[in-house]
Image (cartoon, rainbow, N blue to C red; front, side):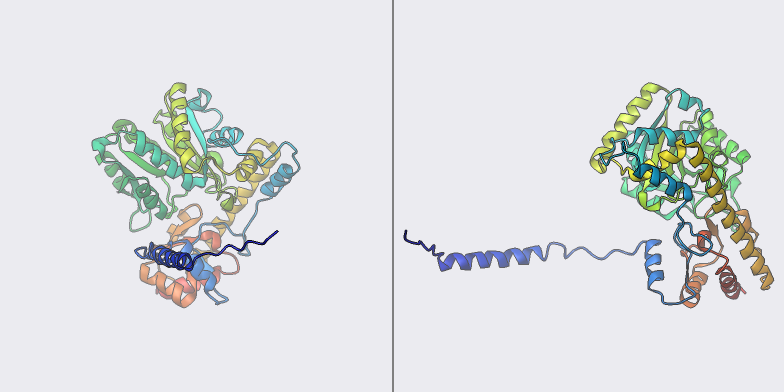
Length: 431
């Protein structure tokens, strides 16, 4: 059989080369208009910290718990839960439902609202698993942007001044606006009168984002009596309360105490939205485990809200990851693991309180004449130090101590080994 050789005309070769060159030129210029964006205020700070060769460096920017040796801390209840999951033949890697793992949703709802909550008993809380607290916030804002009749169609979420930096970005990314209300005084105490005046001045039916406990970045929370007075204004004005509850249990070591505001507003039939996160209180930072709860006035409303949340979720991320939710579900539904967890969050919150007291004591011993009592009055992971932007820059550049420009210190990064160095640095720049 004669072998046939196919000959490709040279003009075809030249045409293909020309087309390839043209395509290459076009494809290389498609993103020329894209400019490099600024680094994230928190994660950018961490990257700078990692590049610093100083043996004295401290990362007090990131909101992640560390043990007293400065190491990441995995809770014992989490390790035990993971072993149980790994040995359970019924556990698989199938997709969760759009709304997440039903058992997780039930358990997280009970943790937030308490088992004696009438709204929970009556089936009036729509709960979906979310991609941690950030995902819950984004999902809620998308829901509000689609379904809530904002007063004067202003599409505005009211936030405390200051608040967690990412709140503003999430609100804007959802097509909404934000405006602030007063929250903190120059003495780093709660500006309760200013807050109440601003809440009363808002249009009726405004949406207000509140921190359920361990306010970020200030660490300043209303008392239970103040929360009750705030709830009264919400009732009078018809405002919509939206609680960001990222630190339940971690703030005080008591889950019920930290959820007081959420449970009181729910009891008053103020129909709050509640975002939950298990990053801090279970240390599941990388698992991205959280939930969004919407309290309604009837089971029928709950079913409608639940269905619409799923419709928002489906094109956004389809369904949530399962591993963190499986861990949380095991712990919340197992009496022994729950007991261990309560003990461990008590240990974590106590260590942070101890570091607050030690830092203030050392500042006084070094001769500081400033009043640092606000450090011990504040609660939770963060300390709103009162340091200026210029002082923060000196801490970063001269002392290799990394914190955000607003002077927020992550007390979780302070340990017995470095608290004296931190006190010395703060004293030197505030003389």
